[in-house]
Length: 441
View 1 (cartoon, helix red, strand yellow):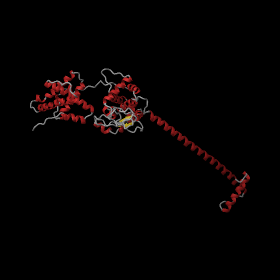
View 2 (cartoon, rainbow, N blue to C red):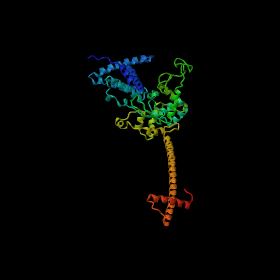
View 3 (spheres, rainbow, N blue to C red):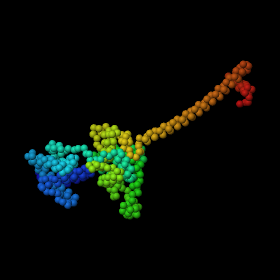
View 4 (cartoon, rainbow, N blue to C red):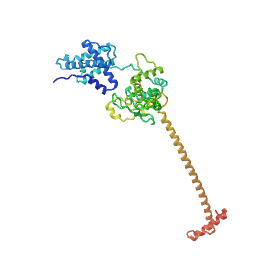
């Protein structure tokens, strides 16, 4: 059987189409470093200078093709030492990276890219032969520890668009790639009672986030959406041209955070925005720390732990996968109350969801008390009417009893059980009433 040549471009095409933007960047970076080092280490050739990006990747793909052929020949050998050549080279490459200034995590990410590259072609590296330091990872301390105080400073320094980005970023805790691609049509009903549920499918793990928009975010976002309708055309500066159909306004973009063109704001655009905003707010970072968009995600997750909400609940909010054994039971959990606790902790403008239900409850109780007072007054009025009627009736009965007693004593009381006797009794009563009380009423 003839072995067909393998093309490393197939793996790159697969990564470009199936992986998230950051994963693509990480894999390509790892393969580039490995290919250039491999070419120099095995063949003594350095990277040609002054190549365009396209020519450079053609050169790298050619190197990776030769690497695949060498790996296939090594695995086909009966000599165990021959079959383990690539694992030894990976170990040498790792030492070269660390001596060259690469961090522990960067070196591991590059190794993962190369390991996945060989696995794609069924030329897997034998993990047991790879030293543990190659696969080692450490908790990064390079990200700036963003605080609520920092959020308040940036909120004060930001314009309307900046405030909308800032508030949504701290509410949702999404990765920058997912956040930048939010479309206006995806937004929930902003007239609903906050916190407003807002779910987004994440690109890296393909998990639906169960996030919310807080009471302080909704009005700012609503105002920002109105401002998008009045964006000035960048071609004619509002004078009217063919691009804007003579209106002088930009055509509506489907994206919530549009760039000057039809595409969403890029990751670099968000990084520049965050850097400029931090400078205006007077936030200073140490030389070995970076203020990145990931800081919002870490802040939200840290707030979930510090408020007692729990890591699992916050993972579901930001769209991180949870253990399958747990997901079976909590997939339909209502995280609204949990988000209220986190939102209160991260509040930057003074508008809180927790106060609104209390006000609503007080208003409702006042309405119920007013209704109760009204019903009690109506009841007392009816009781008084009944008392007056009872008193009048009793008085009339007493008067009739006196008259009847007088008639009986005089012996003139007729037999009222016969029609004639009843008529005579009525006439005598009328006569006595007129005599005793005056009048005919």
